[in-house]
Length: 214
Image 1 (cartoon, rainbow, N blue to C red):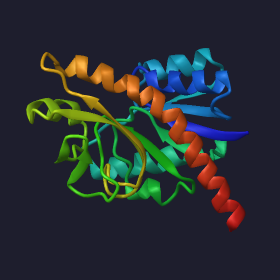
Image 2 (image 1 turned 180 degrees about the vertical axis):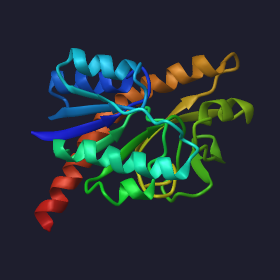
Image 3 (image 1 turned 45 degrees about the horizontal axis):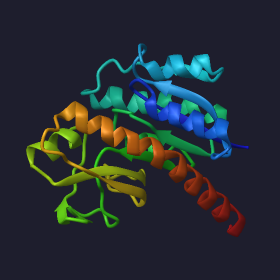
């Protein structure tokens, strides 16, 4: 059984979607550990209730580059003993530093609440033509501020460039005239919950094929 490690900062709705996919047999994997930078995160409670190792790893100062690098090295030390085949960022609100990416050997995927292009560029082709690629933590708010006709959800591989790694899956979500940030984000989350288990299965299959070819 392939092993997944999950990093989550919030309520854990994407983690719940993964656990439901595993329970239903649509995703053949197991969640080995869940780590959060917030001790009160719902994702930790969800993991503990499911009998999954739940690790609280608070970050004291996210703006101190020395502390950030030390934190990511500690994060790698926490994850590696669980021997995950894949690391999933499911609402993880910290950017992984090169120090972490250099230590973690397996693929990493992230779910992002906007449409991202295949080439890491500044625009993405949608059903409504070329639109700006929205990166970072304000993507939902930015979609409304820029009055985009559509936004969406993307699952992609993590690289050193933020929200710019190769896309695994994405799906559009229309922006409705009466949307506020909460309503739009909830509809995006519904799409994320469908995409993430499928994308993880694809990433695990690709990883297996790469190992066999190697």
